[in-house]
Image (cartoon, rainbow, N blue to C red; front, side):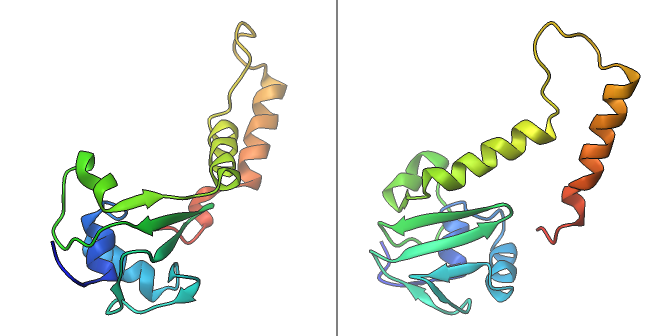
Length: 134
C-alpha cells in the first residue's frame, strides 16, 4: 500500500472515473474538491479526506479509507473508499431517471397523440445533451 498518491490517480484507481485523463479534466474544470477546497491534479490525498465529485446533476461524496495508485477490481474498492453521498443527492438521481425514461402507469397502453406531444414538449424543456457533461 502506498503512502501518498495524486488525486487524479486515486479517483481512477477506485473507479470513480473511467480513465485518469477524464479524472484530470474534471479536476481542471473544478468539478472535484477535497475537504471543500478546489484542487489541482497534483494534490495528494490522505486517509480521512473527503472528496466531492460533481457529475451532473449529483455531487457525490467519498471518504478516503485507503491509499492506492493502481486500479483494483470493483469488489476491492470499499477497502479504499466509502461512499458518503447524502440521500438527498441520490434522490435527485432517481427522480431524473424516472422523468427521463418517461415512465407510464402499467396498463395504460401506448400514449395518445396528444400525450405524445406533451411528452416531447416536456423532454425538449430539459435536454441533457445541452449540459456540459463528460
